[in-house]
Image 1 (tube, one colour):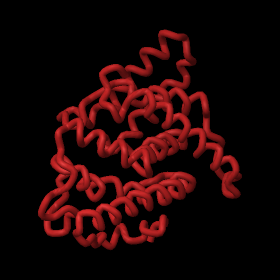
Image 2 (cartoon, helix red, strand yellow):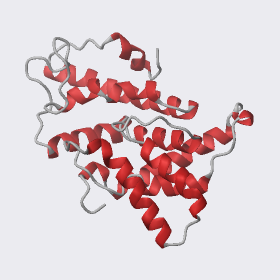
Image 3 (cartoon, one colour):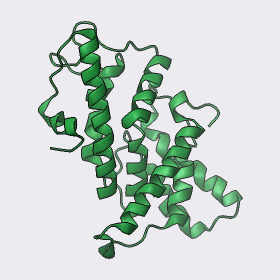
Amino acid sequence: MADSDPAHGLEHVQRVVRNVCLIARKLVNSSSCASTREVDVEVLLPAAWFHDCVYVPKNSAQRSEASRLAADRAVVVLTDIGYPAVKFPAIAHAIEAHSFSAQIPCRSLEAQVLQDADRLEALGAIGLARCLMTGGSMGQRLYHPEDPFPTAREPRDDQQSVDHFFAKLLKLPSTMQTDAGKQIASERAGYLVAFLEQLAKEIGVPIQLPSEFRGLQNGALG
């Protein structure tokens, strides 16, 4: 973790662990939980703690391999401390599948919970702060001077931080795997939309959200 970027340090990992616990509790308390097996915390918690244990820079060509490398590293460390080996395949899969860039389908409830928990980190106040922190560390400008909210062009989130909202962040609520994750993500995405609307007022440029994001203005998916 010492070599990680500012948005993927220990505090991020701690919040993801908190998120997996929050989602797991909501699943247990859900009225539909009777048809769903309980989350295996002996898989979920190690996966959450180790999900970013290998750092690959965001702009690296190997970025999509980061979760696989982290899974391999987690198994090595867990083996060294005598963790039950029977849990390793499920832990490794949850770590591998959490990544947005890896595009690995979740095959377990634990993987779904971890993926949702990690994606919540890209939304709300934390998501806003992490987006701007990462963009700044990469030397990006805040927004495109001629088209701040990409309407006449494709979003370039390798150049402008605000473009990242349109390229990825506002799409996350529709990718959530659990009902609890969808609910929390929808609320936090509404915060990002409110930020964009306020930014539009302050820079004097109207904003027109694409139709796929308009339901987020009230903190709910359309």
